[in-house]
Image (cartoon, rainbow, N blue to C red; front, side):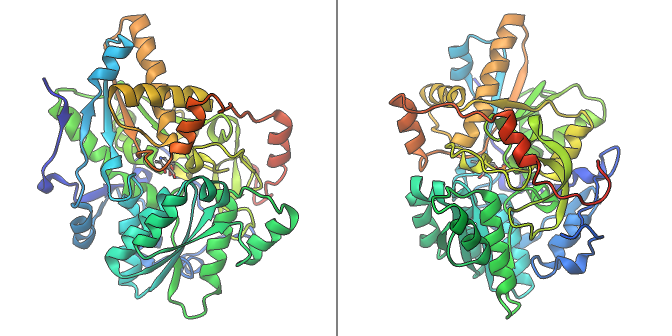
Length: 455
Ligand SMILES: Cc1ncc(COP(=O)(O)O)c(C=O)c1O
């Protein structure tokens, strides 16, 4: 009985896949913060040239440097596992597979891009990286990656997660990084928020402002900023997930999936798994591709497509994306990594083209599915990942009702071993669903800048 498909070291993908090469129309370009055209030279204060080139590239295949492969090979290729016990519990004829990214050193998909970003920065002579983190997965991944290439890492962590997940900070410190709760008094952007809202739980948008400011303030020219999601080069680095999964599905005797599911915060683990399958879909395959977001932060399902800032203070370039408005303050749900106002431009564009079927799910249904998964498949997943599993359960139940033998693949983006507070609240019955009212949404959308023509 086949349970999992594993690839050898030599089968690690040697190139990343760039969806921008295959979309029927090119994604809209980013703009400078004041709405004018953005040149590559305006990004060099923050990013190394190699990443800026990747950001703008429409080349389909981009070589992965040997030095990056040598680090990724510590845990990649990751296994594709058939969730037979979950199938049995759901009495479904569907065949359910998960791509297990929780086996990386930091416990999620995030090191796939952290390693590449640390490498390109070190190549350019950069010695320090700043970044933000929601649940702490990205901050710990970048701290780990920096330790592999001799860089110093400073992480601004959203305060609500900093308080709930103290051991993520310790992980960052073990790898040599520093971790500061955001909003913090160490930056202008942080102080401005604290003055207005002394008890602010923070948000990814605020933490990004702080990390960008900290990078720009360093006059030595040796500090850059790294972003863990949203940007095109981050989506690119994550595509090793889907490229491996395509081969592994074939090893399991499946020609193609019927349904591909992953949770979305800024879009990177979804992109990593889904983009190679979106290519198959563009070429004619019938695949239902579902990004799953929290009902409390529904950028794809209730946001608008517009040019907006990536951060709260309006320091980043303007991106054409689905957004709830950069001033959006999400409720402090446990899926800290999904509390982001925007969505990756490439994911947004794929959604606009009708290639995706986004859904938004409430927190309680997600934890219920995660507990079922833990009791059947054994893995305690991150609260972010639980959104994907809840949608898998819906699809598997539908397959049972329709009597259809569907092939469902989902992204297990991370483990939840440092997220147990959320599980504790769920098990004790304290956890609540969090909704977003029309008034809150309208207030937040009012923060949209008016850059260029309406989209
Ligand atoms: C385990 C896990 N899954 C998913 C996400 C969502 O981010 P993205 O949409 O970039 O994959 C995060 C973000 O922190 C995460 O930690």
